[in-house]
Length: 146
Image 1 (cartoon, rainbow, N blue to C red):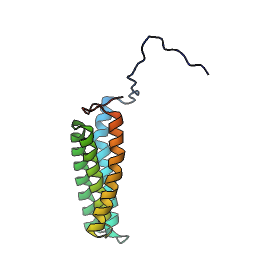
Image 2 (image 1 turned 135 degrees about the horizontal axis):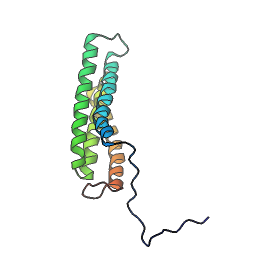
Image 3 (image 1 turned 45 degrees about the horizontal axis):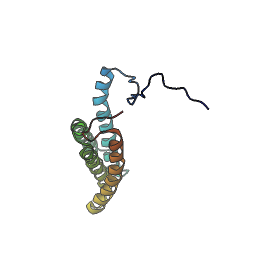
Image 4 (image 1 turned 180 degrees about the vertical axis):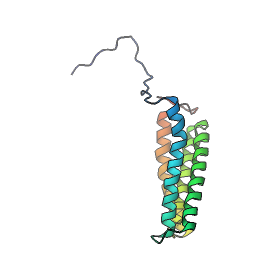
């Protein structure tokens, strides 16, 4: 099979995927995604805590407080992470993922030691994946390379 030859003498190194949404959509998504994830996380934590028992007012309160805290911390990490180098960027999201998983796991009634161990295991896997992602998509100064 033959391929078409480039029209100019140099090959373009900057290929960007097309942006399908406008700025307003991106602005709404920056808030809607953390709120939605927070509500899902709060529901999951409340469901783990009640262990299949009846839904009570305290359980609902726990779920909503957990959702608010998760969304606020997510927004903080989302605002802070892009300003960091790729190693720190990956570590910040890793710490967030590990803490979030550890808290959910602890709500099932597991011991603190087991919850911490499971959180560290999840965080280790998250670090490997995130570091690879940022290492291949950012330069050493943390600017996105597309």
